[in-house]
Image (tube, rainbow, N blue to C red; front, side, top):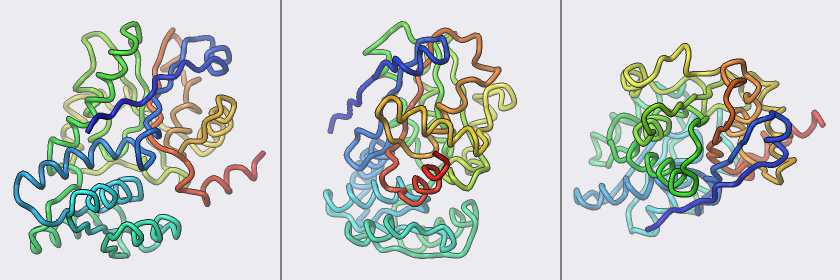
Amino acid sequence: MKFDTSLYFAPYLSKLFKKKIWLKLEYENITGSHKDRESFYLIREALSLKYKSVGCASTGNLAISLSFFSKIFGLKCHVWIRRDKINKIIFSLLKLLGAKVYLVQKELNSLYDYSNEKMLKNNIYNCNPGNSDAKIKANEDIIKEVYKKNKKIANFLTCINNGSHILGIKKGLKKNHKLYGIYSYSELATSINPYARYELEKLQNNFHMKNDFIEAKRKEIIKGMFLLEKEGIYAEASSAAIVGSLNNNKLKRIKNICCIISGAGIKNLKILQSIIKFR
């Protein structure tokens, strides 16, 4: 299966921030996020190892993507989600896609621990962070596509997510090119709340975490959502956090940059409602 999402030059953002800004539109993937790349690689690996089931703990995008591709390739899919953070739209979509959904009252890292144990016990292929380099390889393909379309881009900005996304981008980065990661403690962007500890050592080995990582606060997320709207794009909050952080001091001297727009906002209508009310 071939993935090839658009690289869009953003005229409004470029003029506003006085630099050339491109957006890599990962929401163009089938289920609306960069996780489709990971799911395809992971399921291909699971099939090669003769597994009949795959599983993950998720805040939404991976769960949807893994469920979708599992159904296509004839695998059972198990998904563990935080009970207190359940999105009814996502929950209904997962059930429609045939996933077995488990609602558990645990914070995300503990949910990873809990689901890891369940998958090991029940011979389910584990798609959680830190269990397969296939996730990193899948995300490496994103930056390869950017270079293929535009060799002059030398700076990149993306969400840290659970670690595997930004690690993949980093792996494909050319020498002397720069990559920055966005994280947030805001309830608007739970997918980029503090990253999974399973990838922490790799993050520490590949980044100067104080200099290379930028915290996006609630106001940056809201600002980013409105700025993306000016380009005709409705993205998830984690991508909005990226665009809303473009005026950060660490980025001011940069003359060109590519922002990875990791997912569409349509799956999180509740979040969109809470942001739009600030209009």
